[in-house]
Amino acid sequence: MNTAQTTKNLAKTIAKQIAQEPLEILKTAREQIASDKLAPQQNEVQKQDIPNNYDAEMSQDKLKSQRIIEAFDRELKDMAKEKLFKELQRRIAEGDEVYIDEYSELSMEQKQVLKAQKEAVEVQKQNAESQNKKTSFFGSSKPSRRFGQKQQAQKEQTRVEKPVPPSG
Image (cartoon, rainbow, N blue to C red; front, side, top):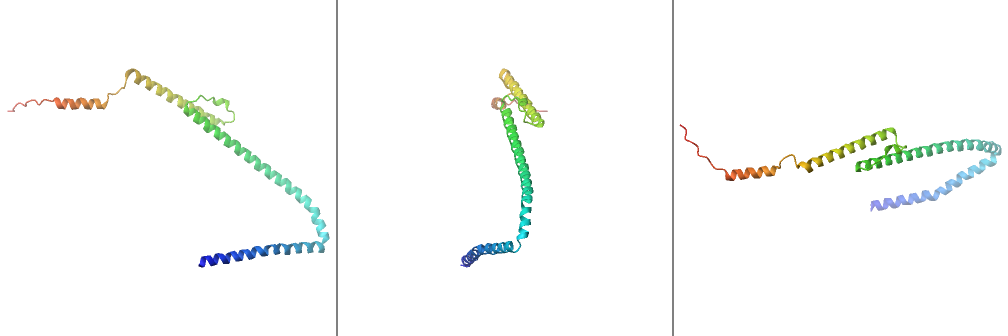
């Protein structure tokens, strides 16, 4: 019950504050209007300064916005480069033929990494091919362990105990 009452009380106070806010705006508006009537000469001076300040602020805002846009453009280009780099890495890992020199947007470091990866994949392919050739022509280089276990079991079954001569 306490929480329900406190939320009700809180809601009432917020509603009262919201209801009073428009009156606060009107109070400040009345002061602004009254000051205009009391000091018309000051308003003239302020109105003349406003365009100069406004133009300066506008030019600063334009410069800021241009810098922000340029930063976003650079970030987008970097993201596109990174995406392309990862795509090329994936394609090389899958064994696709990729011509790295055709991608001028990549940095030299990225190109070197891709070339090294490409060479590593080629070496792996060659090793796999040489392994396939060895196993296909000559079979396995090591005898099966099972086969050795079978022979050992057969030897033990057919083993004949030899009589031991008496010593002495």
